[in-house]
Image (cartoon, rainbow over all chains, first blue to last red; front, side, top):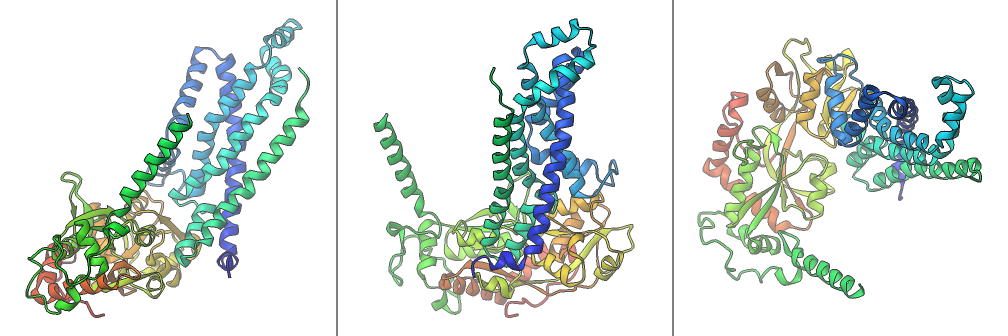
Length: 217
Length: 304
């Protein structure tokens, strides 16, 4: 029966799917944190901070994710820095840093979209730099930042598949495992469907959120 | 604009039709000449002392390969002693590679090498991207449902590769110590490890064995386990690694051919029989395997 292979190996698929969810949610959260910090550096930081953030973005955005993961896997391994041998942790770190670069740009464009008059008005009312950013600019930036961050999140879900190459037991790894053990092509369909199950609701959810936050300019 | 699109589509179809006739995937214009007729590509040196000449006669697949002038072999590029691409010369060396050369020369064509990793070698066969797969592939029931195998050209066995300063001697030690074991994605080795008692979560599967060796070296796993033929090569390439333990499986290696190409399988078996009889098999063993096992060539395992 078509799809029998997926039913028989459901526990393997489920493990993979849940690991992908875990990777995506955690890495996205960390990426947004990193992105907010780096974007703030780039918009309001002095030449030093801005330079660091700029280098971070241009390096991690423009080099292949696969190589970054291989690199982290070896460098963090027990024989080297000795931080972790677990491919899941390596994938988390690698994906967060990689996605953080894209999140930085998304947040930065959102910050720059706020009319400078807002910050000026806040300063003239006596608010400090940090408070201005925190209470006036960032909350307004959230609206314009949601759509590009939604794209970044969707890309992250799909990019998490690359972690299979370092042995992370996520959806692609588990699906291929089933495929090579059973030679059944349905396993590959199962993988595609699994990712779609994540990216489609994400895309629908972002659209709804966008509409709710929209306001007339 | 519309004319441009039509022209572009025509060009794409033309290229597609032209490239459809490579190797074993014969398009109608390039299909086999009737058997028994000497085609110009068939070399007169196809050895006269070949015993069952009938099995070496041109069936459709064999004729198509001779027409194309090349035998495309899927081999490993990173397994010392079997399929290894020399980084300086770019040539593929090893037992598997030389088998490809022997078969190609018997066919009177040039050998061509394509890298086949464990996970894609059977799909490559089924998609006709290669004519044969000679890549340390174990013949087993599951694979026999998907493809055909030649006679057995080498009998390997699964063992473990560990750091010289570690205490593990046998696979049972790895199970008892609950440590991570590396192997290859899509290989029989990882199935054998699970059967030997290694839990699913303790397996770290990589796409190539060189990546597995790297993981062993930097501590991400405590052992690599697969056919000893592959392990010897990894040990040779990296200081501080040793092959240990009794072989806990018997791995008969065969040459893989897509189903439906019986004439090609017959032909290959004929070449293997010749090599066993003439001592050529033993020669290849001494050249490629003996340096790592230190043992003399055993009897060719052809009919196992």
